[in-house]
Image (cartoon, rainbow, N blue to C red; front, side, top):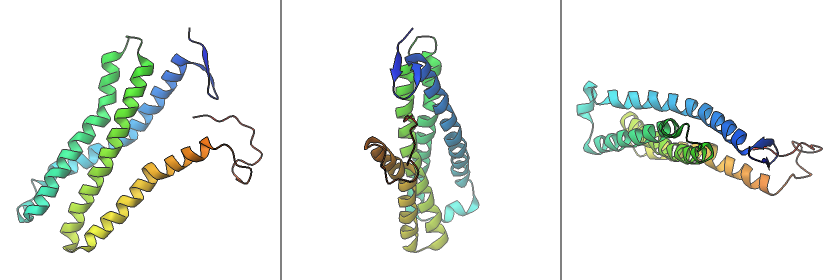
Length: 177
């Protein structure tokens, strides 16, 4: 049996990998549902009567969006396939690492898919450059919520508990991931 890892929890390497895999699966369930709905919408757009009225640029944006959506689906379903092919080979820690990397890649691709989808919709709805400003603002919001805020929290967490932080003041609980 593996020795306990001293990272805030008393668990073996295998227990830690099992917990992280379960957490990753929960995260993937949330992301996959949204991606599948979005991708289904994208696939249906080409069969709508107004599709023929789109400009060449809008059709190009649509094609890029569908390709990004396909890549997103592959990246977010990939961890399940990875796990299934490696199950029983005593590689759970490695599986968790690679599945986590694929998930982050999938989230980056999802960000690009969302921005591309929004760009197409806003161009069709508004027919002006304000669409670019709206998509740019929403893209910044996605970046903040999905990447900047977590990275900021990570940076703060590495610098230790701050005495002036009311959320951690007087807290003696050990840090956990």
